[in-house]
Image (cartoon, rainbow, N blue to C red):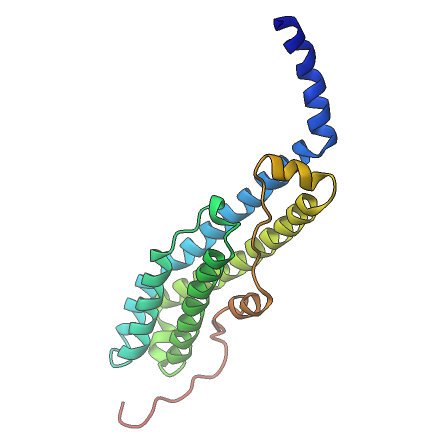
Length: 205
């Protein structure tokens, strides 16, 4: 009986391979790795926010509403955890996207405010932070695009015959991807070009 089992094992492996099991598993791992990098880069951005806000606040303390929006958006991002196992849940993915989009918008407004303060723009710490933010936004774009492609490849595979039967047997489901509207929203990096002429501060400041 044991001998029969050992003889059947290679046959089972061949059948699984022929039905795309190995390919599905490989693509699944690719999406998880790509997602991990997306999360790392978003976290990198979130980590920059406190120092960035404090630096701007040192020169523009009265812009409290802008600081509040950034702080609230960062807190919302931090409250949403989306693991690789949750990627098949479209509602959770959209919630994650929306929070990141809000933080992008808040950071854009913070950067716009800085244009009114030449001394802030000349501050070495601020220049370093804005360079880090710009680099991080670029990394986010690259990581997100890799994830989008990885999910597309995976979804095509698990929805194709006969791999879809194998996927169903082993619980592999299609994963949610970034929506087009939200992708456009969060792919726009906050304006961090400080080569433009400064806008004079409003009278009375």
